[in-house]
Every structure is written in structure tokens, then in C-alpha cells.
Length: 374
Length: 245
Image 1: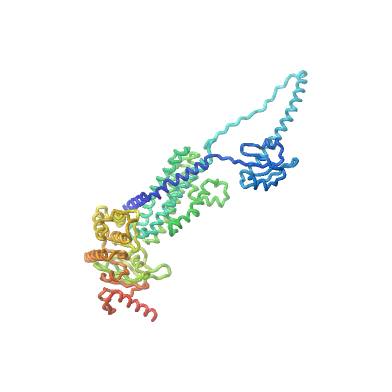
Image 2: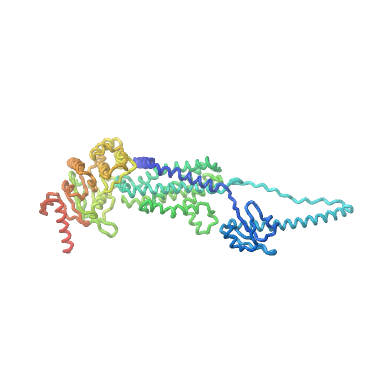
């Protein structure tokens, strides 16, 4: 009865606060859309290389769609060329010696120039080799013609020519980075917004005095917390469904596993965010102080969510990753979407998330003792 | 049966003592006013009586049951010092919500809601959002919430702040009616006119009870004409006593 009244009140308050409602439902979609466009293309780097006295064949061999060559006067200094002409590097030739000076403001471009140079050298060597082979072939053919008269033609040994066909177990050839990022960001936006809104809502109850007024009634502390969980849980649920449906229908996200499992993981994550937000708000005296928890609690979660492969991290960082709720959430969501993980496979992730929620729930009940000791 | 019984109460936070050796007994029909400067410990005493705080030492009981006692809060109508209202909701929604929290049934609530709103003259504005209310209207709504569910004990922290004299009169009339119907009212105030209305006074200064009794008895004991003078005289006595020690 009291829980129901709490629930009603929270839902009613939320529905009247159009702006918060808009933030909760609009902002995640906006962020995901931005990510969609940002990570859509497997964008390739383009670099400009200034060349000084480079042999024409080498220049020809280096040229590609990604690398533009620009001839500069032989006496100009490399540093000057890079600074003034906005080149990514300068390649100078004196005799057979090549000197490469790189701007190195973008490691990707530097690596590309070095690779292009190496490839060009290999190409030139191959060309040289094939010219030699052709000459030898000619000589051989003359010898063969002479031999033919003497002995019968030997069976020619055909070199095996390989053809390559690539199959992808997960995703496809046109899979972009977005496919990796989306499942993670889906979990993150749900986490962030539920965390913020529930935390600030309880904080407002504290600062406005309604929480201590509420505890001057016979309501149980657990009823207050459960009322909050249900009230904001409903909005978390709607948000989660909205985000998942949006991803599937607008971004054409291919979910290899069951969509229900994606929802389940997202909901478990929202529940953790909800209990965590309520708990953390105890340590904030104002909305401003609540915002200060974003860089401390919300942002670090992204780093351990799978954007950077956790398995490649040093051990101590891996330990940190394992206390981050988003690690379990995003990991599970990615696996369901990209590898088609089943409920039994993501079960441990869901259980760990529920454990997180349970711990914060207990902590909430304890901190509420500050307002009423029974 | 005493409604509130406070015996040798010492209360404080960590190492500081806010209240020292407070004794109070109220009976049905009493209107008890706690008076004293801000910071004297009035709100702490109220919080302890309501069981929000556990006594450091001494004993507090309400309806002969030791506090803290959560279930007992259903029989106490409380008005906090700050207006703790949900501003996005209407007056009626606030009343309904807190009524449900007190454990009133939906049906009983409807009748009580109309009465409580009428007492504080909020009937015409009851369906407006609280964010559009003036300070005085919010105060009145807080009082209406305390009156809901017809509780045998009312605890009002600064009930008359921001309420105009005409309405103040009206509220007092209602409080006297309730007291004569056998309810107990405990209130804190700065306003000496409110103190004059009470049947029993407890003056608190620096955490100690400096004078206690009915207004008539106190005026006679200190040979003065008003409660204000009683308070000043008792304060001087306390200072003299402290410097003497």
C-alpha cells in the first residue's frame, strides 16, 4: 500500500517534469545516433609526403590513394617543409641513401608513410627481379629450342596459384567499429542516465526535507527504497526498451542471440545504476556534488567496458575491471549481440550484476538510518 | 495515561550535548509550547520524542510506549520546521500521499482531506501545484498534512511562521477545539502570542529547561505581566547560575 503510493507519487512527479523525461528518453538516442555517424565508416588516413630528389620509379611505386607526394626544392630544410607546408613527412634522397623525417603528430599517418616506403622498395625489387627473370627466360627459350631438337619436351611443373576466400564467424566483412561500440554504449547510456536521475531525485528528497518528513511516518526504510526502485525502475525499463529497439530498427543492429537477453542484461545494469545512484547521493549535499561523481564513478566504467580489450590490460587493471558493473553488463551485451550467447552463457554476468544491486541496496538501508534509527 | 513522558533526557550528537536533563509530561487536552531561541534544542527534543533520534540517556515514551517506535508514528500528526512538500504535485496529491503514508484508508482520507484543507483555508487552491503556492500557503498545507487521519497527538514545529494574523486566529480556534476533544498538542514557537495560548510552557535555553509550567503560574512566579518577561527573567537567572558555578 505504502509502496504503491510511493510508486504513484514518483511516476506522477516524473511525468510532470517534462525536461527530465526528455533527457531520460531523448538523450541516449541522441548519443547513440552521434556514435553511429562517428564510427560508421572505417575511415582511412590520408597523408601528404614531401619528396626531395627521389627517383621517379620510387615515387611512382609509393603513390596510392592514401598518400599524396609533393615535390619540394632540394635545398629546403625538412623541419621547415613540415612546419610551413603542412606535410606529414619529408623524404630526401642523396645517392642511394634515403632520409625520412616525420612530423609524427599522428602515429597512424607516420606508420602509413613508413609502410608505403617499405612496400615501394619491395615492389621495385620485384620489378627488378622480374626483368631479370624475363631476360633469363628469353635465354632459356633459345636454349630450349636448341635442346628440343635433341630431347623430347619435359612435363611442365605448374606453380600452384592460391585463391583466398574469407569467412567471418561473427559480424561480416562490412562490419564497422560501430558494431563493436554500439553494444557497449547501449549499456553505458542506460547506466549513466538511470544513475544520474535516480541519484538526483533522492538527493532532492533529502535537501527538500521530504525524506526526513517521509520517515516521520510509519513507513519502513525498505519501503522507501523499494518504492524508489519500482518508480525509477519503470522509467529505466522504458528507456532500455527504447534504446534496444532504436538500435535494432534504426541502426539495423544484427542481434545474433536473443533480444530478450540483451534486454535482461540492460535491465540488470539499470538496476545496479539505480541502487548505486541512490547510494551515492547520500554523499552529495547538492546536485552539483552529485555531478562530481560522474568522472569518479561513471567515466572510468567506460574504459573497462570492452572498448579497450580487458584481456590485454596489465593484471592490476584487470582486477579493477572486475569490480566495474559496466564490465559485466557491456561484456554480456556484446556477447549476445555479436556471438549469440545464450542465457546460460550470460547467466553469470546477470547474477554478478544482481549481486552489485543487492550490495548497494543493503548500503542504502544502512545510510537511511541517518534520518531515522528505527 | 500521559501522552508524552520525557524523563531525564540527555540528547546530543557525538560529543556535543544539545539537551540536558529535560523532563516533560503531557496529558490529553494539553497544549504544550516549547519556547526558546533558535539553536536551543527545540527541534532536537521534537525529533527525540518522535523517535527519529535515540535518546543518549533518559527515557522518552509516547502513549506509554518507549520511543523510538515506528508503528506509533501513525498516531502522531507531524509538521516539520521546513515545508517538506512535493512541489510538482498539487496540494491534494500531497495530502493523499502523506495520508497514505500515515496508513489512512482511501475512503477515510477523502473526508479528512476536505476537513483539513478547510481548517487551513486551502480549499480553493487544493488542486493547484504546490510550486505555485506562497510561503504561507505551503506552511498551511504542511499543517493540513499533520491534521490528516485525526491523530491523538499533534507535534508542530513552528506552525505559525508566515501565517497572517487572521488565519493564525482561525488555526488556534481549531487547535483549542481539538485539545478540548482530548487531543494533545506539542508545538515549538518563537512567537510569544502563541505561547500565551498554551496550557503548559517549557522554556528551553542552551539545552536546559529554564522554566516550566502553565502561563498563569509562571507569570505569578516571576511577578511579571507577560510570557516574554518570564523568558527574559528565567534567562537571566540561568546566566547568573552559570557564572556563579
